[in-house]
Length: 260
Image (cartoon, rainbow, N blue to C red):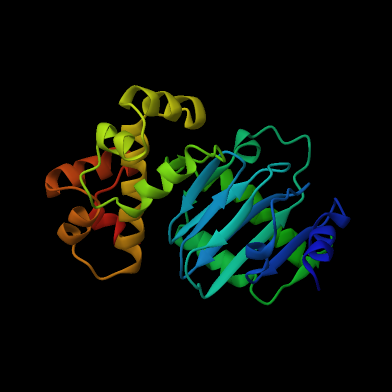
């Protein structure tokens, strides 16, 4: 089944739910669904891309994509399986959870429910046990998902900013400063600072901090490196500063996050 046919099938019946347990979503271009979408990458990490932001999805977290949000999802490394559940969300539901994008931890109950759906694939019709189970899972989400992950990295297609962003991403272990980065691209510090604000709606320092924290999260989840090694590789000479910065953004210490 090709990509366009798969996308058509997901929304073909507005009343049904839909299950897709593979990496097909990784091959979809920018698209949107009439249904709400839950994606859980089992055994790996992923990114959700919208037109202006990139969202990091760590291990043991799911992402809720509300109906109508244009996006694409990709995994940085091979994962064991990607669980995509597409839900018919009745218009009368007033819970704000279903209306906004969010990344949330997967607790043991939700993990077992997601794994229970593994034998299912494709359209799940109303008035079936499978549909009732998925509806229960969907109704459970707002009750167990109270604290979204606050990591959002802005992106841009601005021609002048793209090489700057690429340079920063490739040198996160270096002592990057606004003045030196600006000089490297023939800009004044003031001009580069203005570009960050106008194209990314954030400051140079905030963008750098978020980028380093995302790299640290990847390293914590996918390598056996020590916290001190990861701190140095993300540009921090002080482990305590790294730990405090991480905690300020993620609300858990690096040592706790490493256990996810």
